[in-house]
Length: 257
Image (cartoon, rainbow, N blue to C red; front, side, top):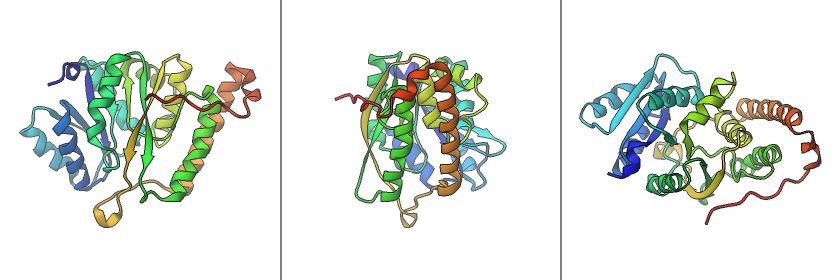
């Protein structure tokens, strides 16, 4: 067991991801202990499957919320419990199978080297990635870098390691960040809080429905929600740093080797 396991855990929010979540948990458990799953009001029976698995696996813990409140709310629930249990860092990992569990140790090691930093995954897309999704995220990335001065390589990728205490402080100070807006707003606000940023490339795979892939992304509604989020963040940025208006073309973010 890595010594980081006493301070770093893998945190997986899950909502109606079906059997895919069991494969994701098995892959994560093969490379890391402990792994926690927050079942966010799922109605597909995965809460029962995960509880059964946790009954015979001391490295797996399952938290259940009574109703679906959103990805950010699920992560918030897990972070509070993790802090109470003595953990200092959490690696967030999506339950839909898009992330590679093989990269978990590498991200945890980067966090151990720079414990004050947040380690942000930078997606390396395969040929199966939908072009609309790949190109569309560039808009959010452009805004996030305008808001932070070019520190974030990708604002939407959910494969990250966060220092728990600073992130909980940001969540406590904001009523937002409880839904699909969690990933980009967390990165921006933690940048504003002064946390260093390490951008690490990581492969991402889009899994088709025929392969068991599950997506709850709603193209119109979620993009509208992201637009509203960036409007809020830009207003906050202008109040903090009026010179942000002069940064029409933010610098490219730095990436770790």
